[in-house]
Length: 367
Image (cartoon, rainbow, N blue to C red; front, side, top):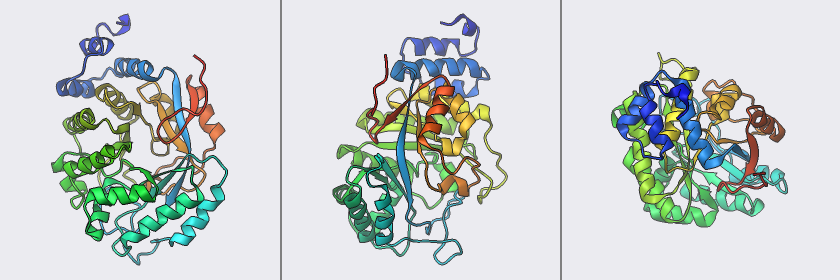
């Protein structure tokens, strides 16, 4: 063990990490409670470099916001609008396809599709959108819809989830997004998103995708009313489910942005809390290969520091207006080019590497 951390209150846990022993829920709680952020970062970086060395990946992607209309009223969301409310929009499929044509030949690896639970759109709208997008961007992976949306599609189509997922996949869907996880603890969900599907249904739907051979991502929304115990519970549910399916390719902690939301009286998580969440996530999720810092939410400077606290992926390049986190008050740039992301990584002492939607590397990295 590094002599600097021999007297740390988590020295025994660092020893477990060095010997590649699985940490327990009790260990996870101790990691969240420690004030030794340097020791925590050291341990998380051990795992990060064991898995990925100095490599930090990113993807060339685009965001498609097809609608912001949603009947649900999650208290942490600033993106949604009610039907007919000022600022609400829903794009026709032909308009979406025309928009996508501008990216032909640009080596866009992924299209991230964002929407909500639209009370009026028919199930066929989503299939037609996927088919249209795949028709003009055949080499671009379509990543879209949360498990909450898949559950909604099953309801409006009166089909089971397996049928919906099969039809979505046949239409061009390559992966589910990780949204909708929030915090799995039911007592928290009842306060922040009482109408949303619960943890069991969320995981069930991802399990269906995993059975089909699809890889998905999973998130955790933190920094609102949850406790350290709730965070550990969330991480353990992810880890236990991953032991069964192996289908989660990345975990994404997302800090709650309180500026423009209905969940009042909550302060934005501190930078130290952010780093602690990244580090503990990396240490507890020993079976999830990647840990992402979503720079659009976290900010550029914190993203660089997070590369020393377990993070190995920074998501993607943004060439158009991102709505979810900017509507919630994020002050990050609206656009960031590929060279900007690469410089962000190299300035942090890491090696940037472009990837595809399945985390296959698209460039050679020197040993």
